[in-house]
Length: 212
Image 1: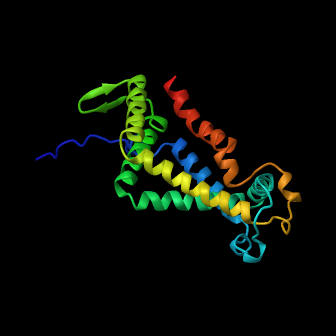
Image 2: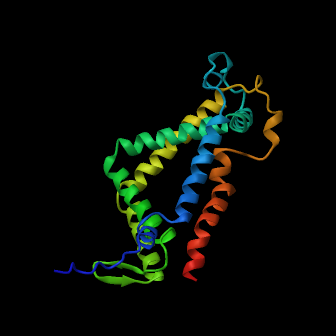
């Protein structure tokens, strides 16, 4: 008895459709490199919390000047503190953490890094690019303003900024060497600024070009 014919399966094409796109790998690699560079360039924590360097500012302008100098010197440490406060707030609010993670995953895998071919099909219905973008925008607004996610994020940022401003206002910067801080920002600051925008644009460009 002859055995039934076996249809060939192109595993390479299947893996490319199911697995992460090159744009997603590029984006993740850039974030990993930026975070590692930022941690490598941070100031010693013992210098940040040196109790002998704390003093009351003489005036509001003096406090403002201290904040500017200390942020220029300890910017990566301060951004790490902000991230820690934000992470603690989300961990202590698991519902908000899961909701925000699901929203981020939806943006990444349903729009930013999803190949344009084949089109998105959910619940037996095919969605165009414009419809997908509209649903994601409405979902983002609903998550931030209707659920507790927005309140958690705002409260965490306010607490983190309060800690940073209080520390930088009372930390005397006279013993800090600020000459090397005149160069353009690197590490976390570049990631939060133009560097992140450029990285995202480079990573998303192939997917957008494919859709066009």
